[in-house]
Image (cartoon, rainbow, N blue to C red; front, side):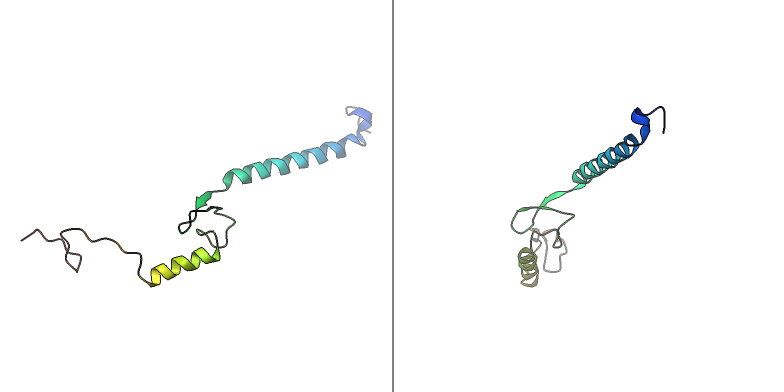
Length: 94
């Protein structure tokens, strides 16, 4: 028995340890929830937790497939400037 603890400490110490472990788990959950990044799917705009998504940065397999199709169809393009020729070289209007 420990004289400094109420009841000699036989039941009090395990209860303190149990409460400490519960507090640590709650603290860990709070810290993990703060780390989660929520992003918008580039295809549909639906919000998704970045870390837990197997299709990141997309929300689903379907959106990932749509993006792949757009790339393969060459739907994504960089616009040419007014004074660029087909090789991407700037012309000075001469």
